[in-house]
Length: 207
Image 1: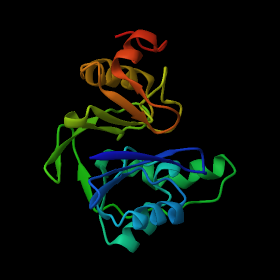
Image 2: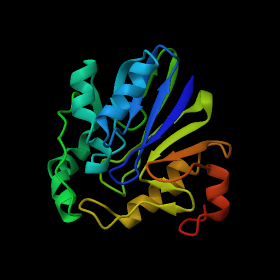
Image 3: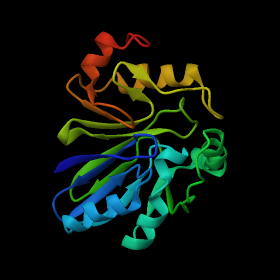
Image 4: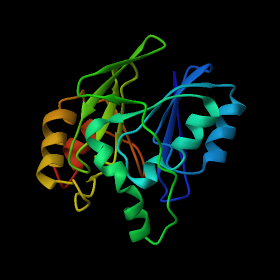
């Protein structure tokens, strides 16, 4: 399997394409539908799922168009439907144009296992940045798609609606820091890291 990153233009958000050169999962298509579409078409991939780590506008903006074009399904945690309903209020707050709000096809829950071509993708519910934030852990490849929960030497903001500082600290300390140290953390913005690095150098949390 390969994990490829597209850093998109809306808020320099990371969209990840996880694929086996035939099928793929798209994580957090936040904007730039045409760019994501052309990338997928250039590799002759079929989208199995669009998986959202959370429903802020900069992580869902291209999801609806991708769903329609590739005839696929969008999944998120049910608690983030609250976030989805107000996602464009946040866009307006930043002086940005509203995004196309996607229709969600199904929900993921804590400890769910998503089977993708024989690879198990574990859902980890990590409230804090938003109440329905999740991370996706791919043990076989030592990969964690962390959304806006854990960044390189930083953590997600908690001053948005449904955010909670106490919750995000708990999520990272008790769920993410229990993963193997060599797990590579791929965040929603910025560069990748590892669990070991964050334990040693993240100034917000020393687990």
